[in-house]
Amino acid sequence: MKAKCFFLLSIVFLFGCATKDPVSSGSVSLSKNKIPSEHGLWYYLPKTVIKIEIIAEKEVAKAGPFYRFSQRFLNISDVITEDREGWRIIGANISTQGIADENKLFKVSTEGVPGMAAMSLTIDGVLKSVNLPVTEAINNQISFEQPSSKFISLENINFNDVPFTEDQLIKSSTTAMAEEVSKEIYRLRQLKSRMIKGEVKFSPEAGSFEQMLTELEKLEQAYLSLFTGKVEKQTVKRVYDFIPDDSQNVNTVLLRFSQQKGFLESMDVSGTPVYIEIEVNTKNTNNYLLEEDKKTENKTGLAVCNPVPAKVKIVDRTLLLTESKVFLGQFGQVYRLPKDLLNDSKIGLLLDETTGAIKEIKFK
Image (cartoon, rainbow, N blue to C red):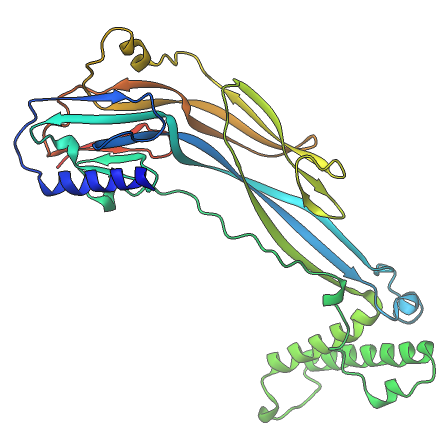
């Protein structure tokens, strides 16, 4: 909480005092601490979080009370013969998000009133822009919907919507009742056929032709479900955050998945594994700021990042769900901009808050 106060107080003070006078001297130094240790203007460069959205489908099937008579009375063989519930993965999405990298905390020290004082930061202190309005500094990121915690089950499926007639209900056996319902299905089909052929006259008060046909179709499907059964499906999404570490290539169990239980924790061996595979290109990623530390403690110029590309794959056992090319800030080169680049308040800099890379340099 104290760290956030340092950020906010520093920004408010420097904005309020801004003028067009150039800076006479200043420095941007890498801190050895993970949080701001004194008053001043501080900012983080980000580390990149890979966000994986796994999309699954739960299917619940309930057998109809007359399924044994489907072939006999309706000549239908493709019906549900037993109640069941099951899960399957149907897709995945990959996105990235930046969070503050505690190993890349910088202190901005200035004399005079530099343009670099007009900084925009995220809530956790990651640098978004310099000399630009906050609205221009907003970074568009993919947002995922909140995961559902309520799942459909067999208890949610019933046949209470079937409008049984008195003739159907008074039958003394299930067989006789099924036969009576099958006759009603054939009667409805015949009525629909006659309507389509124009053999049935009806008054406008009864509704349009399309409305009547739709109602007959719903009635037929309700009766038919007593034989074929009912199926309901629900799409369920889960989002997982993964932060690549110093390993160049990563192959990790992200979660486990069960056809009976759905989403499981990565250590639950009752499910099959879903992997995240990352191939990182870490060539030419010297940290120039660390090299500076060996020479002098006096530094100038804003520190930014040149992120490295990586290929991310999400694999369900051996089936590739999705793959994407992303850029990772934690493996990238950290370097400085020319020290006088941002002394002019008319020059604005927009950074990618996911990687710390330069997105745009604008002259206002």
